[in-house]
Length: 213
Ligand SMILES: *[C@@H]1O[C@H](CO)[C@@H](O)[C@H](O)[C@H]1NC(C)=O
Image 1 (cartoon, rainbow, N blue to C red):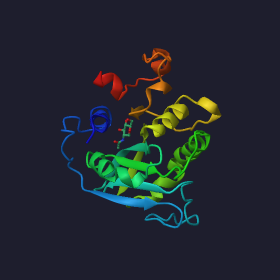
Image 2: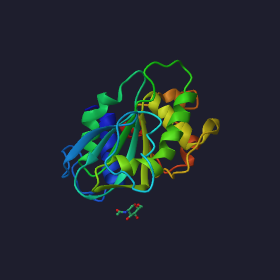
Image 3: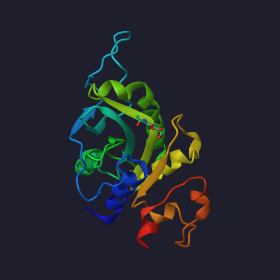
Image 4: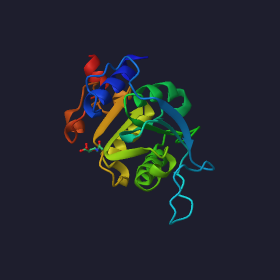
């Protein structure tokens, strides 16, 4: 695992997990499962009152603990031209420490413009409150008061743009943690390769590059 992904795991376990003493290098205590959610797949928990729950705006890969419980939710936005399935091992690892990890497939081919991804991500985050619970195993409940947004590479740009409410898109859900994994430094430096503090001031956040250097 690259240092950036290790940091991602370490940060989540330290800051958001109930078992903060856990060793992030090793798998956690929870058994996990990997699910595909969206488009034609349907759900474990059909509400009796309403018809089939609304599918997410994009297909999602979801790693979840299978034991009964309420778990914090992490969204991981994939890097440029990457598939969410490439992260499945990492997602299962993080999930074994007691997280529901959600990776949407935002696009397969894309140009330089990230507006569509930002918009889709906002829609998916809004969907979490109404839809996610129906697609998880019955004994598993998402704790959306603990929600982390993270992105790898280009996905980090989308994550930060959304969290900072750039370009008019935002989501109603409160983001408790924002994590960039190997996000291009251009995006958050002042143009001279230096860390630009004001970019981060609005958040209690850290970035792996700062920790590494
Ligand atoms: C859900 O998250 C909130 C906010 O961190 C926390 O206070 C609450 O205890 C959590 N619920 C459970 C069941 O862990």
